[in-house]
Image (cartoon, rainbow, N blue to C red; front, side, top):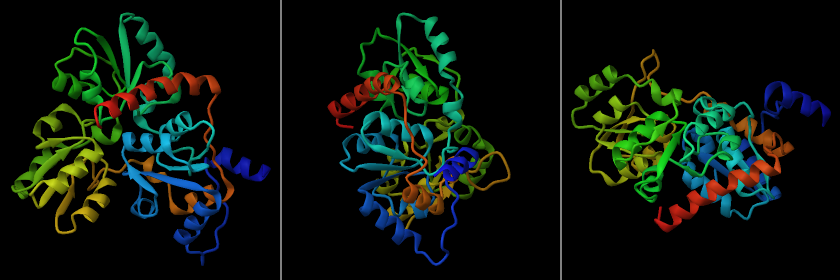
Length: 331
């Protein structure tokens, strides 16, 4: 065990040799049954991980699943703040994350101690934070939101309620536009959603004039203004199922295209290009999770994500408030 912990501290994951003849999908499914474990996966995971997950979703759906699961072990194929959220909502359960270094650039853009000082400047404001942040930041928050419910949560509050919104300035700007509220925004952003190339997207739209251009609200304003539809990952997926178009240009992390293609095999999905040499936008943190890391994670029940009891208690309140508002609004 000591050697495993040393390996974990160095690499952030368990890197034990795996028999190359093993069918990892079969073995992972066996481990799920043996350990009464549930595998939650975000839409941005690699397709082979999505395909063996018990539940695939966006941040709101994953939070709802983490809150109600009866499993003893929650294995989170996502990034660190998502596993933390699962632990906050199910503190009595063991929560595992295949790679501890699966972080988030947006979460990193809002250090809790700086946000606390920022809040002090606006004592008559309540703080709404996007779920893509650390447990410590959630503990400083009045209500948590996701991209699926941010607009509705702001609209559920009295019109004269003053609000700080963080950490994503692009999502905050989108919420301001949709609600007409004057939000005070923290200056944070997601690196994946900030590097879409407007010029290359315009070229693609000229090439595919019949295509619908859809975008996640973490994208910059210029991208959102050009989109035919703006929505969360689950919203984008739903739109592609319900819209009659046969071609879609998709401005979000490219992992979602796997589910879009499965749901609409006859349709064409083109990842919106970033302003670099790559053809599509991948989150390097999301893609740290692999089947091999997932297998070792479940076999050794490491890495485990845990949090101090006081952080769990303080962070749970704003998340539960979000879930209550979402349930009331039927989200």
